[in-house]
Length: 216
Picture 1 (cartoon, rainbow, N blue to C red):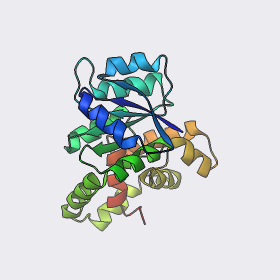
Picture 2: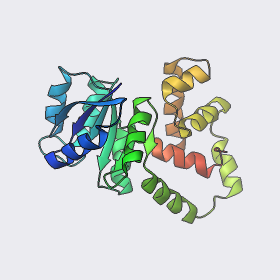
Picture 3: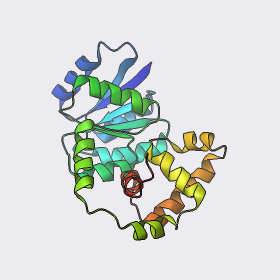
Picture 4: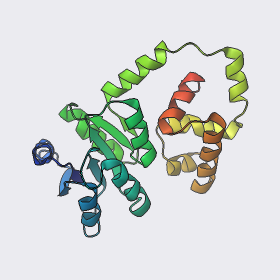
């Protein structure tokens, strides 16, 4: 059973999501909060697997609440649910520690699938944003082959393998298991990759991997 906490400053939104999820046998809503501060107090006494998080809220917004969850409750996964579709907000939310991002106009099936994906520790980006970012990527100038070779030469073979698995949506723990190494080693590789590629977040790493042709 996936335990969910709904966080939104509008009661009508929380009621709507609760009703939407009511027919799902593997998902149960265990609590609600109208801002990040209420959420953190709720987590002191309630266990949850996924927090469905709005971004714009009074007292403590979703971004700060997500940072606090990553620090204080790392076992809890955050799925952002917002109307904000600007790339900067989405990147910042992933940087804060969210595993997924869904627009509020997404359909029931996509929201349910997003919850199940994030509950397994996998990253998720709703289809509308995925298409938007893909179109932006396709409109960008094609990378120079020689320059690309020089860039990827900066990554070791193992770092390239780790980057490919990050781009496929695997968590550090899953990558460590797949490559028969420790989670801490993967975290070190990930930091080295970020420094070498100058990527600011996971979304930027995935974009880099696509541009370098590392995804097949």
